Length: 224
Image (cartoon, one colour):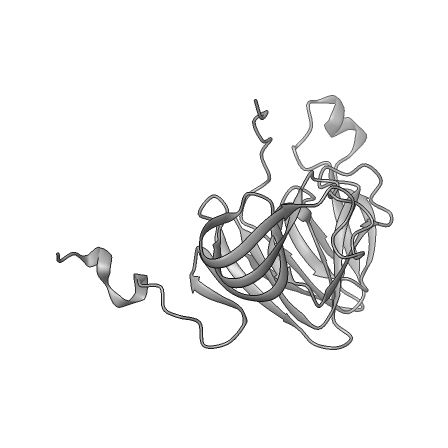
């Protein structure tokens, strides 16, 4: 049988070492040797002896809550084998954490991560009940985190004297040590006339970076 479907870049190969790699731009491959964590329902295929367990009250003592402010259930994957993870054909990116690194991530952008990473749900300081959610996920430690993004993200540097303002519905994540607050960018008169659609943003200050996606989040359909 012949087809472009069977091109070498589409073929799954045996993993050479435990851990995660990009299968392609839309899918992450994880060679499991013990335990890892993933977004519930994100597994698209696996082989080997693996068990998938939904965790209602935290995974391995690392989670203070089982779901983020954006309603993201997580699962533990245990055993020996290989699994592939994806979410709605969104672009996948692997972030490699070194000692001292800390990243704040919107829960809707988390795909999977190493069990060696510490994970905590924290209130976004100064953000109140912003559209992006009151809670975000803060990752620290050493290991890898796979993120998904609807489209190609934009990484914007944040300088000490040059704050960056981001739409709370478009932000993916930012350096965890940045200071956050809400910024109102339209006048009361503009609001009376119907508004610009860009009333309030999240202001980030300090020294680091922020990642935004090229679209605003849309409401998810109710699950029946």
